[in-house]
Length: 295
Image 1 (cartoon, one colour):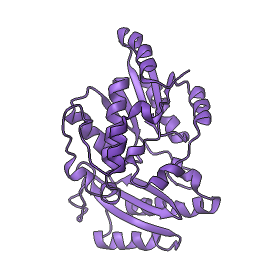
Image 2 (cartoon, one colour):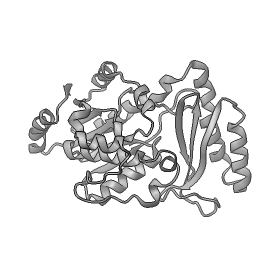
Image 3 (cartoon, one colour):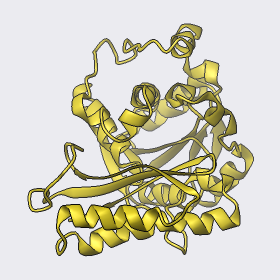
Image 4 (cartoon, one colour):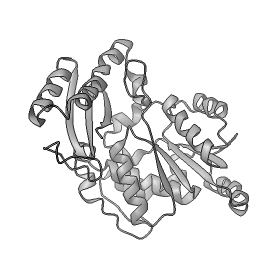
């Protein structure tokens, strides 16, 4: 396994692979890897000739700078995990390798700059105005900004993303379509801890007691999945909110059932054939998201 820090070095390694027409699989991450990330590497290894993983804590997708500062950084441990999973290349750039000072200053001033989109203005429309987009202003612009840069650098044929970030997945698919990028976006199933909690790098900031409390998040979603065909919508949502709010240490940000394609709220389950239940909640200072598909 090769660890590369510069775009120039990575492109040198990629030239021979591209000349040999090897299929490149790409797994972009922010590090603090866990079994969920490794499952993405395994999916990529099964379908691609070369697997590249990036580790980059992207500053432009954090609307809360204290959250950026607290985000776990475990590069050495991450690299050991990736080597064990037979990843071929790990790309670990510094912030100034990925961004110009102007781009970072625009972020600091909270100025929305979309010139990054290869000369095209990206419009995610309703996709970015609900759920995460409504609660984390500018978040998806930052996500698309860094992912478009990484795609342009790596030029993979396939890119792998976890379904836990369901809305992010929809945003990236939209971005790839609008920019006409020849990349297949592969959605991979959520990997869960034994108590049902969706694996996340943020889980490392939870105490053992908080991890157990956090399992109510997935239990609530599983309850919705179990009863969404038998209960009336309002009754189902009331029961779900009551279940999660039994835990006084959990602050619920949103709990919504949305159309799996448009992400717009579904208020009648008979009309929501392709639906997904999504949730965001905080335990102390740690914000967690999760979802289950209902079809």
